[in-house]
Length: 275
Ligand SMILES: Nc1ncnc2c1ncn2[C@@H]1O[C@H](COP(=O)(O)OP(=O)(O)OP(=O)(O)O)[C@@H](O)[C@H]1O
Ligand SMILES: CC(C)(CO)[C@@H](O)C(=O)NCCC(=O)O
Ligand SMILES: [K+]
Image: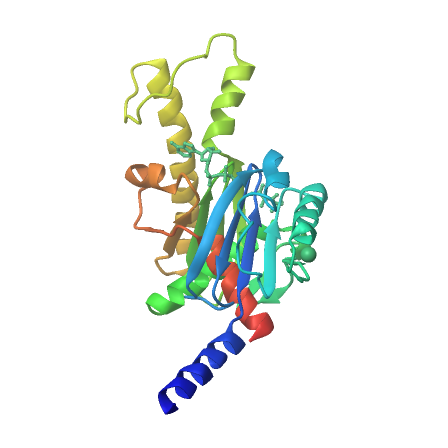
């Protein structure tokens, strides 16, 4: 009898403390989502997935069907108002989900990071969230240093923060895919298969693939130099994005590859918002 009631009350506590959290990242090409057991860094991942933007309408009947109802949701969107509205529609279709969707708007300061952009709210929400996630990672690993956050996706961004967590500014460059498509579209004779990254490319395929890769690696190297000189200290570098690993062999400085940087940033922000 005692044992049974003990189990029951334990179960009750578990149910009360459940704060399931849905994180959504609407990028330039794909929507990525992740369901966590709680809205704090390190929370257990319950489920995750990705959909091309043209397939957002599949979410409610597809990947989200059968998921536990999230208690809260925080998202990050760079794909524009229409994509955001289409996601709201999917959330509304979910039976039993009673969510007030919240979306990150870059501000002057959040979660220990300050924003040096001329117009702070015009900074891409993905860059803001990634920097907050990256700084959280750095502080967990050790002491505060200048920090470069690189995101390798449809576009590439290289963002610099000083050791105090002030965002100094950053670079936006075309992603590898856009660079190659621009060359294919803008020249008469460049239609070749993907090549290898080489120091001295001797065919068109290798020349294009290496050119794109070293354009990205070179931008990171330059930002590293700017930030090291500005701060008088060696920066740490954190790299994220689906194609980050492809850049690894071509990078010139030590860096850390982090898989779910945007989700990590959203978890940090969610904990600050909701405790
Ligand atoms: N060898 C490579 N080196 C660097 N980048 C690459 C390479 N191959 C592909 N990419 C880039 O990686 C991108 C895919 O990365 P990822 O999956 O993070 O992006 P996505 O989810 O499609 O983009 P977004 O988050 O902007 O929606 C492609 O768009 C391409 O530009
Ligand atoms: C630069 C991208 C496209 C990278 O995803 C995104 O962060 C964005 O749309 N930014 C808005 C412009 C800016 O950050 O200055
Ligand atoms: K609903």
